[in-house]
Image 1 (cartoon, one colour):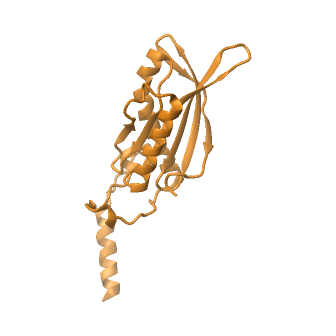
Image 2 (image 1 turned 135 degrees about the vertical axis):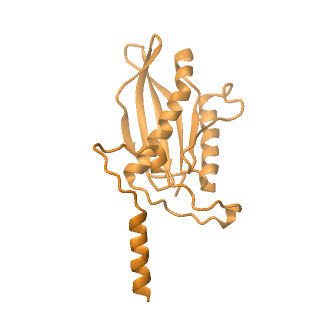
Length: 193
C-alpha cells in the first residue's frame, strides 16, 4: 500500500513539472533565487531559525542584488556631493530591498552614524526577518601626491551563512561615477551566527 502511494505521488509530481525547452539558459533573477515563506508567522516567538537551502552562489547573487540597489540610491548623492553618509541595506525574503538610515545622521560624524546603522542591522538580523543585511560607506586614504583615493566599502551578510565585503575605488568624472575593479573578500558572519 505504502509503495503504491509513493509511486502515485512521484508520477503526479512528474506530471506537474513544466516541460519547456529553451535554446539559451535563462539567468536566474532575484525572484528565482529567493525562496518565499511557506506560511506567514504571526508570532515571532514561534519562528524556528532554519538554515536556508541556498547555494553559496545564490546567496552571493542576492547580496550583490542588495548592493546594486543601494548603489542606485546613492549615485545621485555621489554626483552631487562626491561622497555619502553610511547606508544600511536589507533584503526581505520576498526580494524587497530596503535602505536603513538613522534619524539625524546627516549631521552626525560618519563613525557615529555607522555605529548606529550597524546596531540597527544587528537588531534586524537577530529577529531573523531579513534574508540579508549590509552596510555601505565611503572611506578615503591620502596619497603621497596629496590626492585622496576614495573607496566605497560594502559589507554584506546572508542568513544562509555567507558574508562578503567589497571595496570599490571611485571618482567623479563630470556627470558620471567611475568605479574601479572591486576587491572582494570572504568574511565570517557576525550578524547571523
